[in-house]
Amino acid sequence: TSGPDPRPPAPAAAAAQTTLTTLSVWRQLYERDFPLYKQPLEVGCFSLDSRRRFFNDARQLRYYVAPERKIPNFDLRAGYRERFVRRDDGVKEGLDHILRWILANRAKLQAPDAAAASPPDCALGVDFVTWRGHLTKLLTTPYETREGWLLAATRLRGTLYVSEVETDAARAERLARTERHSEMMYWGYKFEQYTCAAEPRGRPDEGGVVNTNEAFCTVVRTRLANHRLLFSGEVDCRDADPRAPPGPACYLELKTSAEICTAKQRSNFHRFKLLKWWAQSFLPGVPRIVAGFRDNDGMVVSVETYQTSKISQLIKNEYNCWKPTVCMNFCSDFLSFVQSVATEDDPRVVYLFSWEPHKEVSYTVHRDTQYCFLPDWYLREMTH
Ligand code: 0WD
Ligand code: CA
Image (cartoon, rainbow, N blue to C red; front, side, top):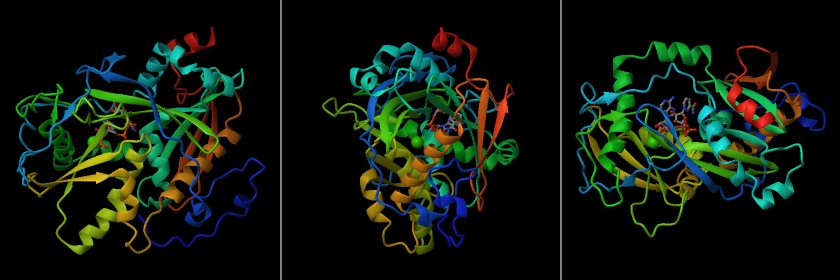
């Protein structure tokens, strides 16, 4: 990630008025003051059940149960063969669940202040609708050296919808996934099972089935510079104390990571992993991240809680480390780039933004193709 970054900005990057054909990811361009980022406000939530069915409620929200022992010795391999139902990640859902939530909650979105601030052609009162995970990828792009991305954008009634398209490289990696890698993906979900209860005063059900179709997602509204955002992200659990503040302040993100034994491992953890963890939780305003550190056999040997707001302090001693302001300014400038490029208000037109490490962000325009992602049921409701 944060190695040397010697490339100069493209000449065009200096001129902000005209529509650029590419956007530079050169870090120094984004070392400005931290942009406005309004405290994310939870405007709703939804749940996906064991069969991936949508519910406009919090039925899948779970409650955090701190491990009883300092060395928990949770066995993350337990149940991988017998008690694991894996979501079919070949099924591309696009923004469908968020769109369902929008249709079920249109009245809420038209809050008085939102309606007043938005032009009449902007039916939802927001500029962007997307997944939190897509924004996380944007935040980390200036430091990413391995994986590129493809983001499809389409404009409908003034709002830009942004949905990821799987890259050829990501698809090849998914299809070539080894058994070991597949099992290690399970470990994260198994850790959730050891530390979450279905009821506020319940206990974890260690012997239950891990089903990755199930999800609880928060929907938040916020503003990045002049961009009004509506996005959703999966939330692992909340503080079990009923006196805890409402979401997102009561939410916790759960993570697993290899135990840190050497200075080199600690440095890598700070430079690479904490960047991704910070970006993912900062966006929706999730204040705490609980990390289970495991050995190579999948035994959790320690648990640590990180305050999202303190992570950037923690990494400041690393040489040439990532900076939150670069992440946020790049994301803001990318959204401005999308605004300037994706001008035609037509769900049959998709602007495909593409980025590969060591390159600039570029785009192509597609009319009436397989890239169209707003479903007919959504278009019928939104345009009648
Ligand atoms: O690219 C994405 N973000 C995709 C998300 C692609 C396909 C599906 N999804 C779905 C997820 O299944 C989930 O319902 O969107 C929802 C989550 O969206 P998000 O919060 O915007 O995604 P992200 O922040 O990347 O991931 C949050 C959590 C992950 O937790 P960790 O601790 O590993 O970051 O959502 C889960 C995972 O638990 N998750 C997924 N689960 C199954 N299949 C997937 C996936 N493809 N991506 C994330
Ligand atoms: Ca997690």
